[in-house]
Image 1 (cartoon, rainbow, N blue to C red):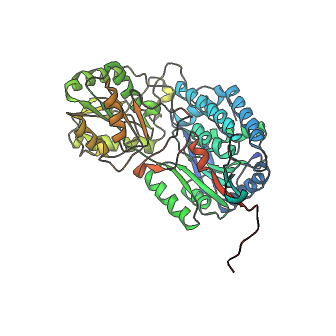
Image 2: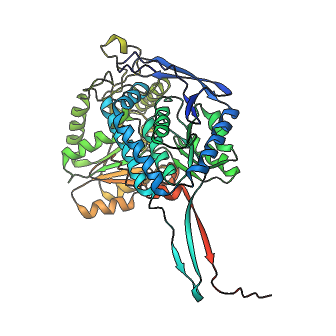
Length: 498
């Protein structure tokens, strides 16, 4: 794999599947996929989608590794996870550059993702040795106890917006609990997860404990339907999440679903305006707006609407778009042509429905000639929006902020909750009672007061309603990657009723 760190030069030549401790070509395939460098539009890899035989091989390999790993103590597992975290930290620049090349986000952001990734492994290394049961005293000296045990081979299916980080969010707690994992990244971003597999191997996991299969929906189906898979954790869209749940239901597999969102960000007139503007920027334009928990419905109290909008537009104007590997770039390209066209489709509808384009929403062509084929657009702010507009109701997954005026708390809460999604929500206000009252009333799994889109690994992350269920991060994730066994111990004689 060429390690050149400039845009327009990387070409993947190595196999992207990982099984039994090394990179492999799949033993069978169901078609092929192309991965792009979004900033140039170049194909950087053409790879086979893993077929049913390859998926089975990966699962059997993980099953063998599980037998070894699950017998280790929490502290033994902890040491391996700490070593993996150390290697990620050491190789962070290379991983971040690869993430930027394949995903398009700025190197500045990719570095933050990689930092969160090693922190995740460190955090779960700390929990690995703390997995414990309970002892319960029963009458006559008898007692019961519980054991928290691993599930077995878990499947992780990742999204393309945070390829490396999501893999760590899933693998960290899964491995800490003693499970094995077969991971399928998005076919848009196949490259960096294989680096994680190599890092786990170098850190000392048994060969096969973390395997990678590549492919699209068909490969995902083979994984979800496999009888030896104990659990599926998926990050992605609502329709795909629904299909995964349906497939898992056939064999009663537990699932964790982290799905889409159309989250509200509520800004009251007593807010610190500068903080509120910065919060709205963070809620909409990270990773080119391709973030599931983004606060894309920005509700602004009417008496500060004009001032707030003016400040936001000023800030958006200053966002530097261009080559994502340059230090001062703050917005790279959209992940691929399909997604870019989808965003423009939403903007066309917004225009037809009467939204005001306050800034942006146009194709962008950087001056650098090598970026001419890239999937760039200008970040967009829409004013004059109403709750009935498509841009306000549906997840766009691009750099588009919709601003909506409101008058009072009761009204804005009703509007904020009038959605089938429930991933996140935020409020900016100086009134402490109102802040807590509002987040208590928001039907969302991840809420922010006077900030937005901070996701420390210590805090559980996940949705309400159609945004999914189960939690990633925090101690909560450990419960989703383990099962409880109850043991009842009789210390006297058996009294039979027969």
